[in-house]
Image 1 (spheres, rainbow over the protein chains, first blue to last red):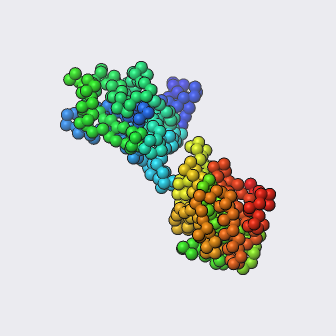
Image 2: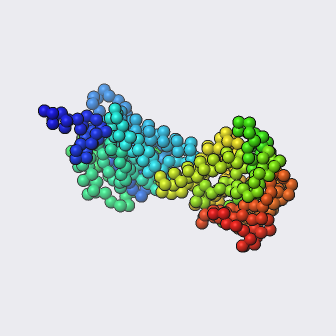
Image 3: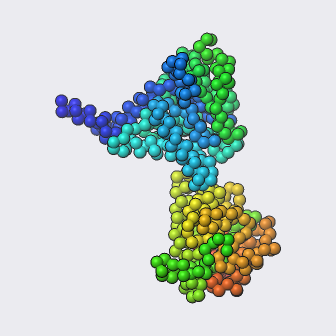
Amino acid sequence: MQGNSQQQAYDRGITIFSPDGRLYQVEYAREAVKRGSPTVGVRTPEGVALAAAGRTRSPLQVPESVEKIHEADAHVGIGTAGHAADGRRLVDVARREAQVERLRYDQPVGVESLTKAVTDHVQEYTQTGGARPYGAALLVGGVDGGPGGTPRLFETDPSGTPYEWRAVAIGGDSGGIRDYLEREYEEGLSLEAGTDLALSALAESGDGTLDPEGASAATVAVETGRYERMAPTTLRDRVEELGLDAAN
Amino acid sequence: MNGQPDPLAGESSAGGAPTYSTGTTTVGVVASDGVVLATDRRASLGGRFVSNKRTVKVERIHPTAAITLSGSVGGAQAYARQLRAQARLYETRRGEPMGMDALATAAGNALRGLPVSPLLGGVDADGPRLFQLDAAGGVLEDEYGATGSGTQVAIGAIEGRYDPGAGVETAAELAADAVATASERDTASGNGLVVARITADGVDLREYDTAAAVAVAGDEEVVN
């Protein structure tokens, strides 16, 4: 009984290690991320594509109100997975950091610097008593150095560790989607092909179909160095053309 | 003088006690392959007493950038330390040195409210740059500039003689000449010169007794 209550204590406080060196609350936060719908990022020489599937719980819900992909600054987009509210807070951390960089240095923030500002913030919540970790993961995609610059794609996880990827998925069924990306990803894709790959990968988690109503996508092209959200009509056409819609 | 604190008003004081003021002539000149910063070596109390004859008023704050100090010595030195810390932190965190635009913005931000009017010169991937900063946080880019009590004399010595295509050695001679000319007439400037030649290779900081010595290799003391 006593042993049992002591064992339970390891997952009560996030600041407490288990005897084998694990932080249970951080691991539970990772589980929270897996419960969300997936978000995919693909980096190509022409830019970065982000795409997300979303669930509309009722035909009465306005699909655009499910926000999975956000503009962090003119040259960076962020895709979220997991607790939507936690994700929004992290997006705001990134947005603030992007403006702090402009105030401090009068330059657009680097994608890596921005990611690390977010992960440093996330890490703080794995070490602070009385707080809980963020139940959200992010994909931070953008172009460094303005038009003609370098495309970068990073992942943040609830432990506060940054990872850089060529193609990656977070959220529900991200394991299966990552397998798909590992099979299908090629170096030297066009940005359009990269976007198609991201959409196809999302469909992989939905039995080969993707509901264009709940889905969203955005790109940051090397040519312009700017974040651009894909219009819902364009997205629907793309999904149909790829044969990913449910009617197919 | 352009809203800068009057460097001759040495009585501007910390708690009523007189503070060291550099009085000063500091000059910056952009060359084709670098930028030159040059200053005199005199520090004075109230512009009336020479309190130090070997003041180095150019400080390296970045691998390829430096500032000149004019105004309150204590304020200027603290400001240089601040900027150096910011530039180092930026570089260690990101694995690349700060660009000149970022450095100039940070320098302007950190300057606000300080009784200091520096020049910032440096070289980055886009080439050599020179900025004139003021106490309100103003950042003005130019090809040549001067600050301190000898400003008007020094700038007159450069005006009409500046050659944007000249190399760093020619620019060093021009800058040194401007400091020497100002030292002839400005009582708060004098006691030889310090010249920094800043190129993509780094900041080369040297002391000279006369402007003529700047053109002669070997007639100098290396500061760093």
